[in-house]
Image (cartoon, rainbow, N blue to C red; front, top):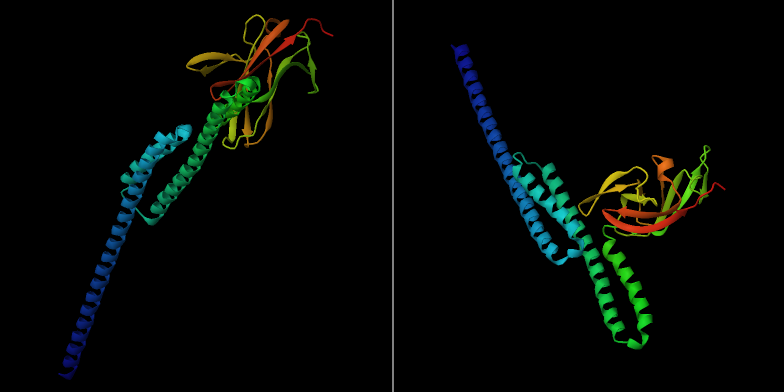
Amino acid sequence: MNAQTNNSNILKVLVALLGVAILGLGYYTYDMYNESKQTQQILQQEKEQVINELQDLKVNYDQALKEKTEVSGKLEEAKNRIESLIQEVKKQKQIDSRIIYKYKKEIAALKAQRDKLYKIADSLRAANMTLITENDSLNTDLTKQKQFNDTLLNKNEQLSQTLNKAKILYPVNLKAEGVKIKSSGKIVTTSKYKRATAIRVCFTLPKNEVLEGPQKFYVRIVNPKGDVIGDQTELMIDDQAILISGSEEVIYESKPLKVCIFVKPQNKESEFVKGNYQVEVYHNGNKVGTTELELESGIF
């Protein structure tokens, strides 16, 4: 009888302990569920905050496009990136802290790019206003017209370089000459068309604090017969296809760089003739330089 009673009491204790355990597990599960739910709510709020920041940044870029026309191309690229990010964030179904961090980092980079472009645009505008002021001053002094005209031309050239430096490199010291490339690799200049095996076009790229990275230059050479010599590949300039003689891609590091492009004829007998050759250099869809050279008859 006592044994039965003891067993019954033990069973009751075990049942009670099991009940307590079940209640504790249920409470823990409920607490974890609430914590996960709160975390998702916080992440969702941060997602909305990211979208709002991107939309505000887009509005900011829209306004900048109206005011900072000097760098509109770069601003338009950044704006398109913002619009793409907004759609990307909105499509995110599962959001976590890693994804939030990624988008916040993108936003910080876009803000930094905006500030940099603002400085460039303000610098270009200041240079333009300075030139306008100087032009007004020059035009008032008729007795020194020639001197002022020379100064004005110089200032215009400086302004032209400043306004275009955001996208175009204008080479200096442009020179073209006939050369003979020997089997050893040695290059010898020559003015005789029968000795020449190629035309070498050399120039120097000036310092440019905005452009950097790969830059491709094209050369077009027209012989005295009016034929384009060399590769004769097509390049679009102002929606019109023109034939190009050769090209060269260089890595530009925002500092002066000498570039040489060698143009070899496809048919030396028909392309290399006596007379004057017209040379044109193109960069980013613009003609940036011209020169000419003369190849004479004879072989010595």
